[in-house]
Length: 106
Image (cartoon, rainbow, N blue to C red):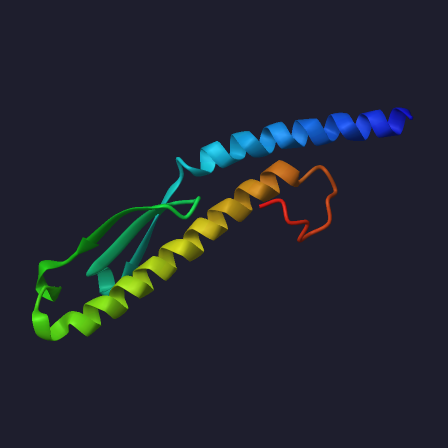
């Protein structure tokens, strides 16, 4: 019974830490870049896009498709960086708990 109570306490602590981590992820920002810096997408580690910067040289009607491709690439770059930041936070949170990988706590 003591083991069960200990596990319940650990679960409650983990839940509290997870909530704090989710809030912290909203404050971590990453930047995705494409086209050698011509397009930049800024987002939080919670995958919320905060801003997009486009070099004025890309604002030509005949280069619309290039701009669209660069936006997608920059967004995907930012998303990968946000996911890496989230994984890093998860590892620091669950590192000492001995939880199996892929538990689905994200």
